[in-house]
Amino acid sequence: MLRILIHNWRLLALRGGLALAFAMFAFSLRVTPFSPLVGAITFAFAVMVFGAFAFSAGIVTIIAGLRGSAHGSERWLLLVDGCGASIFGLALVLIPDLTLFHLIQILAWWAVFIGALESIIALRLRRHIGDEWFLLLSSVGSILFGAYLLSGLVQDELGVLKWVGLYSAYSGITLLVLAFRLRGLQLQAHRAAAAGQA
Picture (cartoon, rainbow, N blue to C red):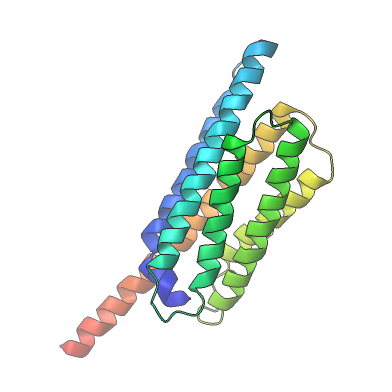
C-alpha cells in the first residue's frame, strides 16, 4: 500500500486540490445574497458541481489504484474508494428531483463509507510510517461529518453548503499534507538509491 500511495502522490494532491476548490466554491455561494428562487437554483447547481467533484475525485482514485503494482494485494481499497466516490457523484447528478432529505442521507452514508475505507488504508499505512496520521485524520473527519448529517441537525440548504464546504476544506488539507509527505518519502528513496549506486 505504501508503495502505491508514494507512486501516486500527485493524484492524491489532485484529489485534495479538487476538495479545496469545491470548498471555496461552496463558501462563495454562502456569502452571496439570493432571492428564494435564485437561491434554490443556485443550490441545485452547487449539488451538480459537488457531484462532478465527487465523480472526478473517484476517477483520480481509481487511476491511482490501477497504477499500482499488478501484484499489489491492497490496491483494491483504492479501487473501492474510487468506485464509491464516482457512483455517489453520478447519483447526485442523475437522480431526478433529489429532495434535501435524500441529499443529506446520500451525503452522510457516502462520507461514512469513504471514512471507513480511509481508516483501513491509514492503519495499513501506519505499519510502514509510524508518524503518519494525516489520512487517519481525514477518515475520522469523514465519519464524524456523516454522523452529524445523520443526526438530523442540518435541515436547510445553507446548512448543507456550510458543512459540505467545511468537510471539503478539511479533507482537502489533510490529503494535500499526506500527498507532500509521500512526495518527501519518494525523494528520500531516490536519494538513497542514488547514494547506493555511487
